Figure (cartoon, rainbow, N blue to C red):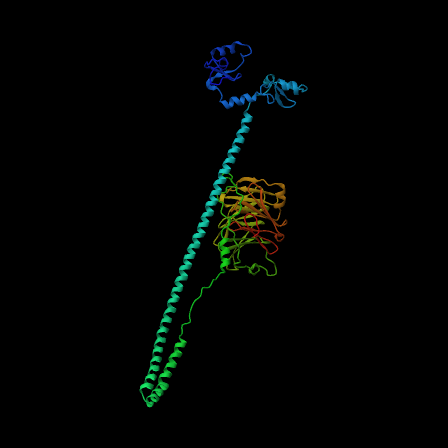
Length: 530
């Protein structure tokens, strides 16, 4: 083939630089006008496909075309045959040396008529792979952005903590210094006053002492006796009274710096105020049911008991019967309780044992869950219904009812995306509903997860902190977290989780679950025991 582009290849071999006018795809070189006529005249070349020079493929494509028709075992030979026994192409040398006994050795040119030359399906597959590749690049880009955003938020939180510490230290320093100055001023004035009185007292004593010396030196014995009588009778008694008063009024008030909190413990609490922990993020497309735009940095919290409530003290119940609450939710200053055995919701105030209101169900209820600041969902699986209700001024009001395709035992809400996650224990499935109650999709769960997580005594709660569904299993003593693709994120087991029931999640993503063992288990968002 010619070295210079668009020069006739055949003429160039004979040292003639003649500009080509067409390109022969089979010969893979340009042809001048004469060589073009030779191609049209010669029987062996007349079937070669000639194209315009403007349609000549790039150099890398030309090399690819050449490699395609070159025998993989003999670089100087072109492929002639297709051996279907070995599913390989080969040249004449290969056919004689390695494929003489093959039953289906076909000439490649002969079978082209029997093969459909159509790359549409292949292009579709490659397009799909291209989309996947671009999706992977987009995923990594989003992941990089997310990591940078998390870093920015962490550094911002760190800066906030530092500023709060500096502000608190400045406030503490100002308070301590000003308090010391005030107390020091009062004590100083007292000391100054006492010093003045003591100096006056010493002056009087020294004066009387001087009188004695001078009278003894210059006076007679009568003078000395008379002075002695006067001093003993009046002056000394007065001085003794004065010194007694000075003793009583001695300054003794002071101050000290008292640490209300052990400083070492305070430092540990400060050190643990911000932690960096691993987190499995979900970077699905924005607007899907796995959107991660509402991710929040995790903060560990330790619960502290604020008050207790004895349900047996509620006047409406027989004291001989044990009152067992199935569901308990807290809305503002109200506590909504669903007791076992009676189909009513009780509303009491957090600071009172009196029942403010009762809401009677017309069907047996399985659970009541909080889905908003004042919103709740009541599950009635025996009627295949769920009711959307609100608490208004201490009274439960049903806003709407929804007939469901399967009986849902528990409903929790994905607040960031305004969706409801519904679990059917009897059917062993979890559905995601839009805000209007229409089915968005069903979460596919593997059989082993379904067997472990879903039973007649399972509860669920959506953790919007890290976008996972927390499921408690009363029988297996298990707390399991699933992402919205049905994949297990973590599994927490404990022997005291017998009868694990209702689940709660605090704003930091910490998970709380109750059990029959009178235990309240707390785990981090990643399932670590706290």
